[in-house]
Image (cartoon, rainbow, N blue to C red; front, side, top):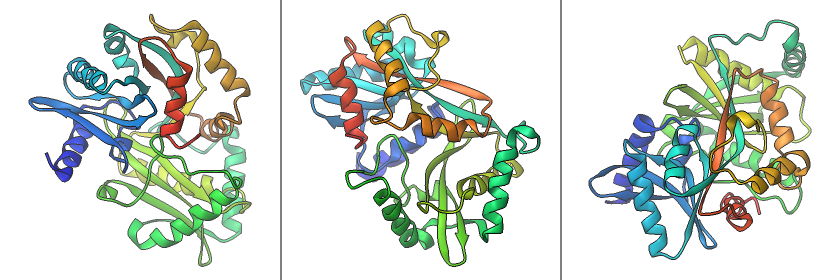
Length: 327
């Protein structure tokens, strides 16, 4: 199967069989796709060290068969599998195949039919938006290709503000451009002729259909309220179009709960994840991400899991971060 045919097949699988809010990220450049002749569906992965790092679980009508065949594929290459952003419905599939599965974080979603910026809870958000508006911020939806050069310039400024050793994340975050840009939406905020910030949104299918607040950037040390204004405009637009949910994506080490425990979970790994949530800002800025998402008062907290082929492993977990360019 040619590259274009594989990409088409992956996109069809994402649109018809996935219940993962981040499933569209399977189409990111740099991902590999495992398929089986005669078996519908796909497994998305990257190679990192001695691991095949799987993204989001098998997507297809027979997830167990896909996982079994992918496991055999990994063994034939003398590698183990570690899967990230596994959804609750797939946990029994992994456990039946002998994986150790632990909650590793959560994703957050707002029900657009119930959402409103009115009320005391959103006073700070409204004030930030008003401040950005007074500074001359104008928000609108635009076609991405026409803004590509300005977006990349802003990306460079934003990354430089994170320090000389900062690297752009990938794999577990979205992108723009490429053959699937037609499915994404881009909202920008400008002050005069300057691009002050943007948010790219990816489509979400499954039981909570809508949009994923995916890739976002703003001018370092810019006027407060830029991102809030951009996102509020997008939310109003999506709601007017009849979209039901806005998803804010996966945040590691947050939303941890005994309610989301699994039969196979590793106790020591659960302890490690809890410690990373409390003290791991140097590993991943979970608290900062969570604060932004919680300011929108999400209606749903969706547990997400990591699955280790065999026992839980620090080495295997580190390969997830390496695949995401975070280490």
